[in-house]
Length: 257
Image (cartoon, rainbow, N blue to C red; front, side, top):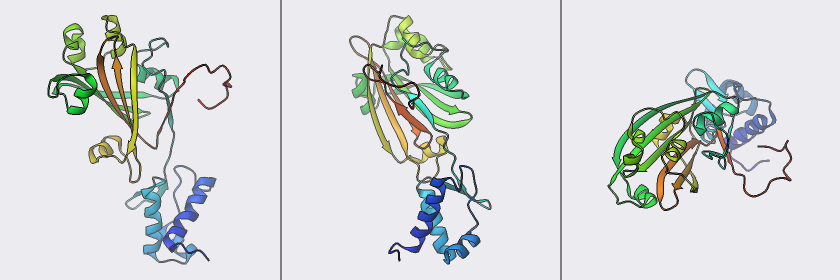
């Protein structure tokens, strides 16, 4: 006989059935009444088990509609190629990668002049509180919120590349735009972390309970100094990042990308 609390037994049984495909993504779970009969359990016990699955990001709940298995159509991002000018692009890297994956991109923008926070100032090697250009993107894949991206540029860059401070998209992408003005990004430093979302992140990305965010901070450098700091916040349940490092001639073409 299991020593686990009854609500965990309910959650574990349903989790196994979700993993095995008995309940596919988008499928509704049985009603609370049906689960009460199946597990010979009280309504509170069943609800606690379902709530555990919600907190783990496996199912979602809607008032009056019951519980549904979450759909996880994961987008795979090759972080090595993202913004790499050696690879062919149609516009900016985001649109190129999403379109090449057979998916549909959409994004909104805002641009503002803002004081550099201590973290941003440290990465850009400018004084805290000095003026930076912030370009903020809210990005979607197939109309589903995919990420937010906040990029800070040091104020001195706008003198040589004024379109950075203008509202709206830069069609060819900011990395290509800067390169065309003699400011080439020759390297970058990446930092990757995960945590639970803030209320604002959960709102923008429509994140359900129990789903973390992936934070990708990329600081880009010219030959002699930093030229931008980008923080991309991804939904943890819909994204996967990969890198290509070294010679990969031994990698089979049918291996996961």
